[in-house]
Amino acid sequence: MNLHYNRANDLTQGSIMGTMLRFAVPMILGNLLQQCYNIADTLIVGHYLGADALAAVGSAYTLMVFITSVFIGLCMGSGAVFSIQYGAKDYEGMKQSLVSSLVLTGGVTLVLNIIALAGIHPIIRLLQTPAEIEGLMFDYLFIIFLGIASTFIYNYYAYLLRALGNSIVPLYFLAVSVVLNIVLDLLFIPIFHWGVSGAAAATVISQTIAAAGLCIYALYRFPIFRLKRNQIRLHRKSVKEIATYSSLTCMQQSVMNFGILMVQGLVNSFGTSVMAAFAVAVKIDSLAYMPVQDFGNAFSTFVAQNFGAGQKERIRQGIRSAVSVTTWFCLIISAVVFIFARPLMQFFIDNTETEIINIGVEYLRVEGSFYVGIGYLFLLYGFYRAVRMPGMSVVLTVFSLGTRVVLAYALAAIPAIGVHGIWWSIPVGWILADCFGAWYYHKVVRHGLWSSGYGSVQDTREQRHRYTSHFLL
Image (cartoon, rainbow, N blue to C red):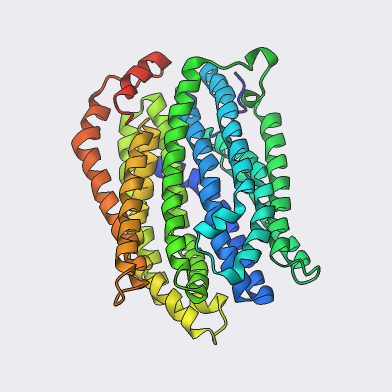
């Protein structure tokens, strides 16, 4: 089958470190572009609309990350299945998985969109939003929710392309979206005076254009994504595989972001100054560790393709290389964020807002000292998804977020600790989850994974299913 191999990337061959980095760099650049937009959006909203609008958009952003994490998790799960099938050269299975994933993920996204639009007011109240910014949050969220379908389409095809090793094309379309978003922000907010509604409209329009472009490209350039009428039917085994994999990956993403959303609600209870500081500091925080998150996703695709192809030794070498890269990057970026925490906050906040700046600096110095914890966690998430153990990613997420949420609420309730307890609960959750994930790999997974008979390209899908079924949690 002609998959346009010149545009796909077989991660089962070539230099291990070079292969992973070449695949990861476009993903990292793409997210850097996205974060640059988030920074620009924060600057534009904060400069032209003030602290209340900044707090409203920041709180709404956390909510949107949670909602989009549902269908992004579904897309990620489908992409992981595609990576394994692509590594095993199972093209018939890829066609079946494409139909199943379109039906399941598309249906869930539609239902989610309807629920989100109908429940805006209860959601705002659930987040303990201060009364003075409720109206701003509603205006922003209503328009953003209208664009959920576009966000889904872009991410669906982006993950499918990445499953085939093509991470550069999604970057191109994302770049167009980011530039257009910033231009429209500058048009809608300071010139048209549309306020937070203008910021939301700019986001939806730019995402819709990127989604349409990426969809057309994928269908035109990759015949595997084009379905004939007689191929549009559901296969029970394929539906079960996609549903199991995608639902567990979705659960992992949703649990992670639901925990963050609960922390956001706790932060909101401390007032507008803490909300504004948190909104800015989280963006800086996300930008700092974002490269290792993308590297973890690239590592996952690398492992999945090699897992499908039976390249066990290549996976082992890839693990060692990935841990080394992650460690050095996190140590360097931790030092940078700790030292430059105050200038980073002052880049977004006027120097006269000393309370907001001081709160943000403390957050960044606490989180920034422990980025290696979340770096390892991203590698663990990626590894367990790739070897058909997405349930373990859910366990690690619950471990990490459960610790974070419980500690945050417990410590914040102590008057002498207050909001400081929220900041310290986050790295504690990372480290405990890392310890458990590493222990489980060394004591339970490693022997079964490397000593099994699974691994040849000629293995049938039924043989692979029998091998991996006892690993699914």
